[in-house]
Structures are given as structure tokens and as C-alpha cells.
Image (cartoon, rainbow, N blue to C red; front, side, top):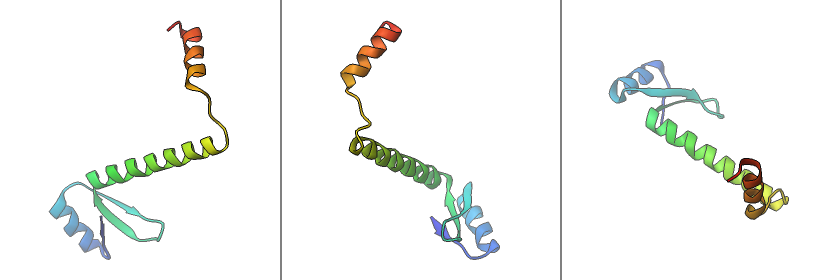
Length: 79
């Protein structure tokens, strides 16, 4: 990930690296990164969010035993 400060720097980064993603972060700064970095960043963020939600579900007792779920699926879908 590369922070840039001018349009000319953005153009230089794109010409050097090919396909890039340009976005504004939560600190109101423009960020330029490769598509690969962007995809990895998105995947990392989505994975972290899902893990945090899962941990919250466990802490609040919003879980079910796998055997119960499998039994329901077998009954419903004839597995």
C-alpha cells in the first residue's frame, strides 16, 4: 500500500505498477494499492469480521450443537 499526495504521484504509481485501486481511508487520505493487495486486504477484513461475530455468538450463547443441526438437515432434506 502506498500513500500519495498528488495526482501526478497517482499517475506515476499506476504507470509503474499497472492495475491499481484508489480509495480514501478513514483518515481521509487517498490510498493507492495493487489489485492483489486490495483483494488480500478485503479478504483479511472480511475474515476478521466473521471471526469476531462468531466469538460474539459463542459468548452470547447463540450456538447449537452440530449433531442437532445435522439431524434437522437429514430430516428436512433426506440426507
